[in-house]
Length: 372
Image 1: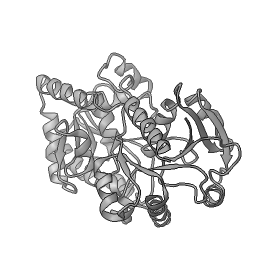
Image 2: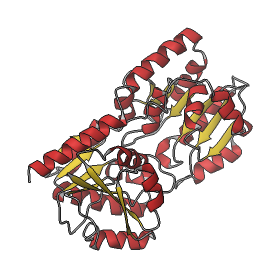
Image 3: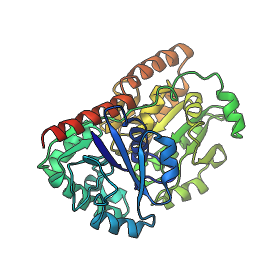
Image 4: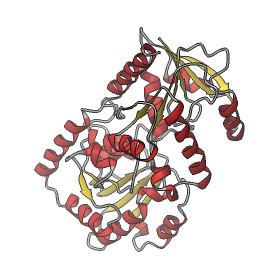
């Protein structure tokens, strides 16, 4: 079978949904599956590097306004696209489709919590998701939490299949042999304890809570630091102001975008990976941290609990004192307790792989084509 995968929305530094697209693009092509990657013009080189077995088609205009217009009027209709099936992995699909179409719904917070997103994105993605829920041949959801919300809020008229994301167990593992060297090469100290956050800086990530909680912990512990990895998104003026006035700002490190090769070492060497998000579609950093055998603090009653099971320390959403208590507990773990929790975290993460994710995608594609 021949599958066209729309990769045109993936930014230069992929995270979250972008990482999902990259990872399945690397793995979908097999002896039985020919893969066409529909990319932005001028963006072909990186996709050829990531997925050398695929055919890369630079068809989509690069500027965002032109890309959105193209998506609404011409996406998927170019004669160079010869695939049997189209997959839109980021909510959208061709409005004038000419072949069976599968669409992935990564996140329903555009409906449940629109205040967490820019208004222009809320309008665009609500419209795209509603359309896909009625006109695609099949939907993919990346978590049971998201699947339940799609049914509850949209009553889709097409079938939906839950296919969780995965983790690269070769890259995210517990082997810390070269961690100190990696940290030193990045100009980071190796002689002090720290908590680590990784994610785009935006309102739903709970950075405000983490800063409050760290303040409580830092007041009783004179050594521990907070290291923040990730790019600034939107709506972060409050967090920026807090960082400037935080009583322990000299112990908070802004790392910015963290190179992929450094992330596992940062997770492994931390006292805890902190992901106090108020809500996500999946929460990939939680899974990656578990695969590294790291101590993980995240939020109960969210998709992160679905992913982590009993392998993470869970705190109520929006509860800074509970988060602070969790941070203190992670500092108090002795070596034996930390090793036991690390083993359980790795065991949980091993049930999620990108290879399984890609295999389930191919099975769904085949099922859709067989039903036509």
